[in-house]
Image (tube, rainbow, N blue to C red; front, top):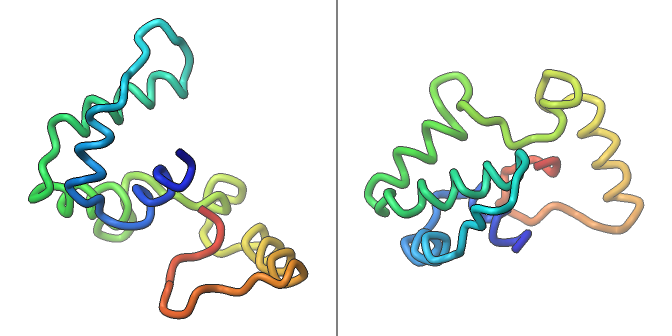
Length: 110
């Protein structure tokens, strides 16, 4: 599930992903912020078709200047992108022997 959600934050979802998401059950009996967010994602997936997914992805994650959602933890920790939390994470990843994937221009802190 985690890799599925990470994929939704990384690039415009393929129609197969949208179809899979639209078929996942939204438990109406569960309460809380995560349950509310899941239901919203579920309902959105049912109404989005692939042709508009590019538009929606751009609006939420890229935008003009900055999208509506910043999927980077450093933004929520400091209010800025690519600050000390990202530097600390990169140091830790390097200590663990992990390196960025060639050609992937996303930061490591989503």
